[in-house]
Image (cartoon, rainbow, N blue to C red; front, side):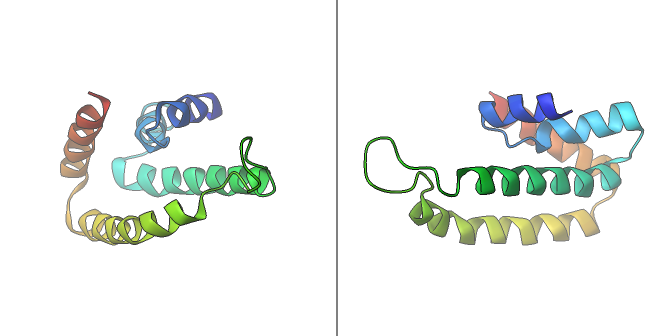
Length: 110
């Protein structure tokens, strides 16, 4: 599963689009159980990447390679999206969530 996460991160989809179907297919989780497990795996991968790159220097200028300005701009939209996603997760049944996630994955993959 870690190879799939690495390939997903390189493709720019974050890993959740690959981990949820794998958890459902190979481990028999339903949609509502696979989503939080996927979130934890993404969190752990992100934290590991942050720790590994914390002191990494930028190749062209005298600065760290992490762009904290971009993170500060993205953070509000990530928080709003997470809150909305949690509400939809609570309200909607598993088949509807699966259909919505499949449509989003197809949309972002195209």
